[in-house]
Length: 459
Ligand SMILES: [Zn+2]
View 1 (cartoon, protein in one colour):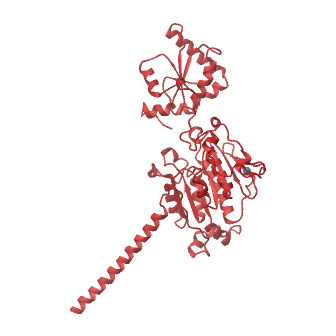
View 2: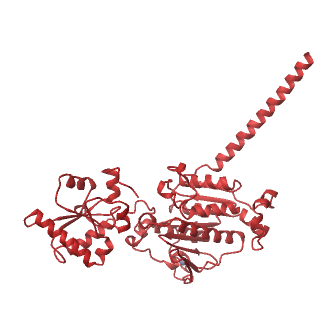
View 3: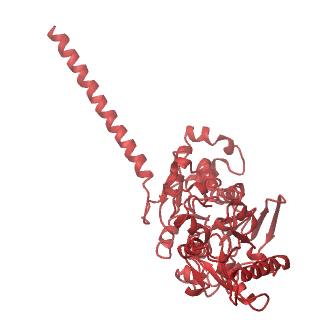
């Protein structure tokens, strides 16, 4: 009896030890998993990445279909495992790019984005889901990538790339992919890549068109060789005001993945002096040869003036995010706030509300009493639209009785185009048509939706 009891006790102790060991192992695993996906809010020094010495049986099984390609083979696959890629922007381009790089077995992926997931991202930023709304895009993308291939090391950065951190970050990666959507970031990434000697796989997508090229690679040009000076900020359109069909950045992001994989595996890209242009409407691809590297280039030329990173927002005259791209073309007395406009409406003041957005946006939503004449029609002085406005001004003058200048308030989505319209209309008033006063409504319809009428749709 005593013997039996001590046997049971011994067995129990052994089991308890086993449980403790398992618990310990699980804790370790959970810790590892959490540390891999720890969101970085500043740039840390990473341990060096080394290529695998050989493929495991699991690797062979996972990558078997691409291992069969003589262009890749075992050597190319091992090269992928030793390559780190920084993806700047986890949006419409960055999502498919990260997905295919992870699936193909790239060694380390840096995923950088300052932004959080929003509902309006989901039609094109396919790594994020409804449940990720409000979450840092970098973390959401890293989690999705880990689910696809847990052997890929992911480093999510929830930060804005800046002249202060770009060099330290980019120097830690072998290849950089620009998936950003604004001009200051393009110059910043370019200059940091030139200073660090890194190839830059760059793509863009807008509306139904996309472009792709590889900069600073095998003696080819850098971004500045082609665009020495930034475009005027008011001529730049981005996805949030120009629109984009989600599949177009999807296609361009896949092309970026293709070129990154070719460079990383050792095949090399033939896109160093080529620009691929994709027209989704006509379903046409064109590849044009770019001008070569310029001896006088400020970044990569023979005597470069850009020897350290500069203030790119000042250089480009615009913000390095697509969110607060605000023009300031008018003086304070040429503009009113949405609250001030609301009181005009409430006091049933005589006025014309001129909505200068394109018809496609007016179809999405508009204020019921607005007159729509798109900015482009004003710019081109389209006669039927000008006549219409003239008629409305005359009508209003009659209603107001007396010698007066009827007020015209101009609105658009965010309050940028409306300022341009005010400048045009001021020139027209009293010369091309009867005199009127004209003011811009600050912040446009989105400010109206935010501050005055929460039921008004935001897009
Ligand atoms: Zn250059």
